[in-house]
Structures are given as C-alpha cells and as structure tokens.
Length: 121
Image 1 (cartoon, helix red, strand yellow):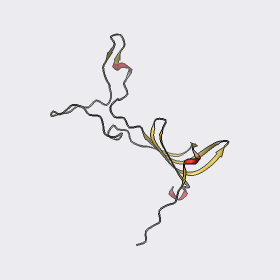
Image 2: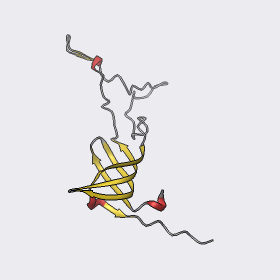
Image 3: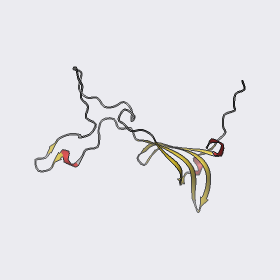
Image 4: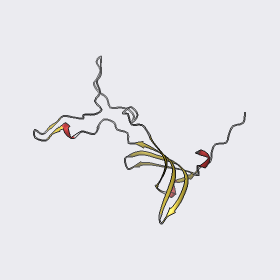
C-alpha cells in the first residue's frame, strides 16, 4: 500500500469526524472537484459526557428528564461518582478504517508522500 501512495490527505473537524486521514493512491479531477482514491481512516468526534439520549429517556407527558441512558458508569468502593471518559477510545469509539474508497477531497490539502529512507545496518 505504501509503495503505491502518492499523497497524504488529512483534514480535521469535518462532518461527524474529528479527523480524517487518507493514504491517496490516485487523485483526479471530475469537473471542479478533486476525487481521491485510497485507504481512509476516520476518527469520530470525542464525546466527553453529554452522551446521546434515547427518546425513551425523556417523558414528554410529565416533562421529566431521566438523563442519559448510555454511557452510565458505576463507581464501586466510594469515589466522586461517574466521570466522563478522557478520550474517545475510553468511550468505546475507535478509529474506523475504510479500504480502498473514492471520495471528494480538497486538492489543496494533498501533501506529496515520500517514504522514510530505510536505515542501513
């Protein structure tokens, strides 16, 4: 894969992703749009506290908010109660690797890829 890589494409805070990194093997223009093809790694947004709530956690009739239904943590042996995870990985959100994909990319952010030289023994 690295032998075929021509560019590295990296963008932060796009859509629902904190970071997107792509090892681009081919880039071409389709009208005004640049299309990149290669291996893509997406890093989801970090969630600290504020977990998504299920519709069932809010009782509309009584206007009662039951709180988040996912991400609940229990502390055993005392302590200050539940704490928000420190990273997205603590919250169970791992990077997502997509095989060879083609998608629109900003051609201005393509950085030529040069593999690091192999060290001699």
